[in-house]
Image (cartoon, rainbow over all chains, first blue to last red; front, side):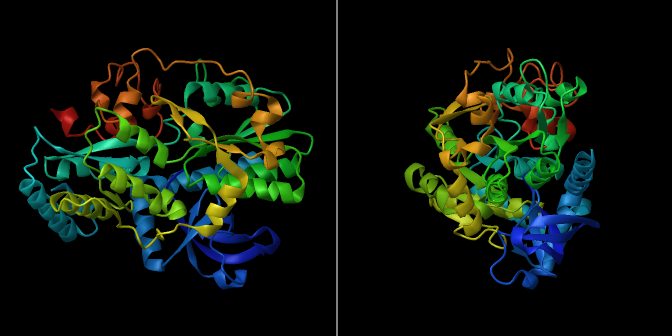
Amino acid sequence: MCLGIPGQIVAITAPERMMAMAEVSGVRREVNVACVADGPLEALIGEWVLIHVGFAMSRIDPEEAEKTLIALHELGEVAEATGQMAEADRALAQ
Amino acid sequence: MKYATEFRDPAAAKTLLARIAHVADTLGASREAPIPIMEICGGHTHSIFRYGLDKLVHEGIEFVHGPGCPVCVLPRARVDEAIQLATRPEVIFTTFGDAMRVPGASQSLLQAKAAGADVRMVYSPLDALELARRNPEREVVFFGIGFETTTPSTALAIQQAAREGLTNFSVFCNHITVPEPLKAILDDPFMNLAGFIGPGHVSMVIGTHPYDFIARDYHKPVVVAGFEPLDILQSVLMLLTQIAEQRAGVENQYARVVPENGNPVSIAAMADVYEKRPSFEWRGLGEIDSSGLRIRPAYRAFDAEEKFGIGYAGIRAEIADPEGCACGQVMIGHLKPTQCPHFGKGCTPETPLGALMVSSEGACAAYWQYGGARAAAE
C-alpha cells in the first residue's frame, strides 16, 4: 500500500476530474494526475509517474521507473498491486 | 555470497558494505554493543529482510523496525468499528486488501465478509467513489488508513465527492502522521536509537523538513531513503558518517523522488480536508497526542464517524491488546519479534494475533517470511 508503483501515462481520459490512463506493468488503469500536473494535461502523455493507490504522486525518469519496477518485482509488490487493481475491477462490477 | 546473485550491482553493494564496516569499526560498534538504527517505514523493513541486509551489514549495526506500517498500528477498537459499519445493511464497505485480515476483538473484516457483510476490496479511494456513483441507493464507506503517502488520496477523493455533490460517500478516517510517533519514541526514557532511516514515499509528500526537530531537538541524524537495497545501504553509510563526525542533520538520499518541500498539491489537499485530532490510539503504543487526522467540519457530510455516530464521534470501547502480545515493545525496539511469547506459536501470518504479523511490512511477518534475522539464528 505504501510503496508506489511506476506507470506511464498514455492518455488523458477525463480532464475535468484530472484523470488519465496509465500503463502499469502491462495493466491499464485510470489514475488521478492532480499531484503531478503543472501545465496542460496533454504534456503528461508519455511521462513516467509513481502511482500510489490510484494517484500519480511524483514524476520520475524512465531509468528510475525501470529500477523501481525491478525492486518492486523482487518484493512481490508488482503482483500485489496489479492483483488489487483486478480485485477492484471485480468489486466495481459486482 | 548472497549479494553476488541478488544485487543488480554487486560491486556497488560490496563497496558500500566495506565502507559501512570501516566506519562501524572506527566507532567501536560490535555485536555486543551495536549501533541501533531505526528504519521508520515498513517498506524499508520489508526490503531489509528481502535482501538480508541485516545479515550482510557489519555485525555492529542493528536495524530496529519502526512503527511505519499502517495496518500494524491499527488498534483493535478501530477494526471493530469498521466491522460495525460494514455490517450495516445499507453500507458497502470498501477497503485496501491489507486491512482485511487485521484482527479486531473477535473478527477481521475478512471474517465479517464471509459472514455476509458487503465488504469490497478496492485499489483506490477513487474506486469507492465510483461505487457510490453506481449505487445511489447504498452508502459507500471507504476505510481510510495510512500515513501521509495515502492521506492525499482520500483528501482528493473527498474534494471530488464534494464537487459532484455525492451524498452517499464517506470516509472512515484512520489516517496517521509520521513525526508524532517518532517524538513519542524519542521521549521514551529507554530510547537508545542512534539515528533514523526516514521514509521515502511519505517524504515525497511532506518533504524533509518535518524531521528537522529530530536533529535539532534530539541531536539524532535522519537520512530519507529509497527502497532499493543499495539505497538503504547508502543511507546507513550516510547515518554512520554523521555519527562519526558527531553531526546530526536531515539528509536526503532519495532526492530523485523526494523534493525538500514535498508535493504542494498533496499538502494543500490534506490541509483543506483534514485537521489534527487531539490524540489517536496506536496498536501497541497507546494514545499519541496529535498523531491522527480527522475530517474538518466543512467536510462533515463525508465523515463516516459523524454520519454513523461511531468511533471518536460515538461511545468508544476500550479494547486492550491480546494478553502477552508484544507488538508495542517490538515497535519501539525494546524486543525482537522472536522474543515475543506468541511468535510462531499462537501468532503466525495465517492466524495473526498481533498486527505486526499481518502485513509484509510488519517486523514479525518479515522475520517469519524470510527465516529470521541474525538474532533469530542465534
